[in-house]
Structure formats: structure tokens, C-alpha cells
Image (cartoon, rainbow over all chains, first blue to last red):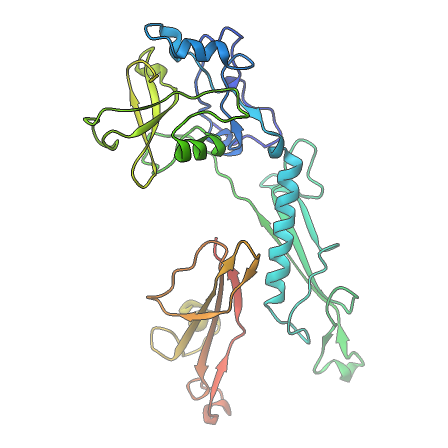
Length: 279
Length: 88
């Protein structure tokens, strides 16, 4: 497995195999990189509006009831340019703040020329820093340069103690630093990884479920089945929780599902079980 | 910290021997106003910064503990600059 670069297309395993929606492909992308990077994608049934699949899900006794797949659909507010713009704004804000907290030379609060000295680019172990980032990659690095050079938007030159002996009373000093997002490659989910799942759920759907107990959104064609499980539900699920049918679990049988359920906190507990999806 | 003081800087003052003093401050980040609050000095038992909080660190020693010729007879203390970092 590898961490997919952000502007590569989503993994084909996320795509519905066809409008019929037979579920033999993986329900969730096993690639954690996709899971992280596709965090703002939303669940979608295989057909465009989810109606056929939803209908099947609500008819007991039909094995294809669990055939709904997760299909990434990019929400308008999640486009890369917006993500990049927001990240750049925040990086600039914090870089300016933290520069101002420090002093150097005659500057009691170091100024950062945010228009020229905050640069976003890309680098990794085999790619030297490049700005702008190469066309096939999403920026992962912010470079900041602080200057004591007497510039209009920077700081006064550094005064020297002994330099005047040589006729030099001040000099220019610059300091450059880069911060890079470090992403690792996940190769194994068999080890204990608390709170880590190789799948994603749109935060709007989850928040709506927590608030209303329903799995639908007004502007969202897919209706996720929800139910209240039995009070005898074994641990780690809470007794009689409101639960959310998240995705099928093909390895546990054709009608099995993986649920996210609420605890009184409420926090999510994930349960895999065999049986028909809840109505 | 002791590694820097004793090994890198070859100073006899360390946290371990009680001759170097560590001062840590925390300023809380307000995500709504997008500003930091004031720096509050914390101890090891009250140190609990949240994500994006500002953590300041400085170290000071008594001048008399630093065995440099004239400083040995100086009163007062010598302070480092404060370095500020963001809690991830």
C-alpha cells in the first residue's frame, strides 16, 4: 500500500462496477492514504441518485441488499484549490505570528514579508524542494525566510560589535526554514491501531446522524440505513445504540454490515455483524 | 536540555543538579478570534497545552554558578532568549 498523492484520481476500487451495483469489489478502499486524503468525499450508492440501491436495501430477503458501494464524490467545497488556499492562509498567519514572537538583532518582534517570503512547494526524499509543486503533486511544504536586511517589509540589518573596526557597521542576515507534512506508508492493519480505520465517512453525514439519528441529508441523494440495535448487543457496542449502517462486510457473509453506533458520549463504536441491513 | 547545557555548551549548570532553571509558558489559541491569549507560566503538573497553543521555553542560571572568570563574582542571573513553538 502506498499513500496516494492528492491529485491523483481516486482508487478505481472506489468506483461502482456499474449501474447495477453488484457488490463484489471492495467496499472501502484499503489504502489508508486514500482514507485520509479522501476524508471529505461522501458516500454514494452505485447508481447516480442511489434510488435503486436504496430500494434494494430496504427490501428484506434480498441478498443484494448489501450491494451498496462507497463511491467518492467530490463535494464542491472540497476542491484542491480551496484546500490549498486555506492551508496557505493558515500557514502564513501562523508563520507571521511566530516570527513576531521572537526577536533578533534590533528587531524586538521579527517581521515576516508574507508576500514574498512564504513559499509553498513540494519536496520528498527523492525530490528537491520545488515551488510551485510539480504538476502531478499536491504541495506538501511551506518555506519561510526571515530577513534582517533593512527592507521595507522586513527587519533592520544586524548591527555589528566589532565590524566597525573593518568599516562594516551592519550586515544582512537571512534564515530559511521549511516545514513538510510527513506522511508514512501503511503496510499492515493487523497490528493494534487504536482509532484507525481504513475507510472514511463524510463528516456532514456523521454530524447529521449524531444530531438527528438519521442517515440522510437534504442535499444528499444517498440514505444510509439506521436502526436501534437490541439491548443485548454484546460489548464493545453500547446496549441498544442508535446505529448507522456504514458499509457491507463482504468477508463476513453477503448480508453482513459494518455499523457505526453511538454511545452516550456520543462516540463511535464499530461493529461488524452478519444479518440484513436495518430498515 | 541537560544535554545541551552540559554536553554542547560545556556548562556546569543542569536541570538535574538544580543549577539551571526551566521556564515554560503556554498561551491559548482562540480559533474564533484567531489570536493568542497571554503567556501563562506553567509547571510540569499544570502543563497541558492544546493543539495550536503557543509554548514558550527559556532557561536561566545564576551567574555565580557559571564558572567564567568575572561572571563568577556577578550577582543576578543569565537568561536565554525565549523560543516559542506551536503545539501540534
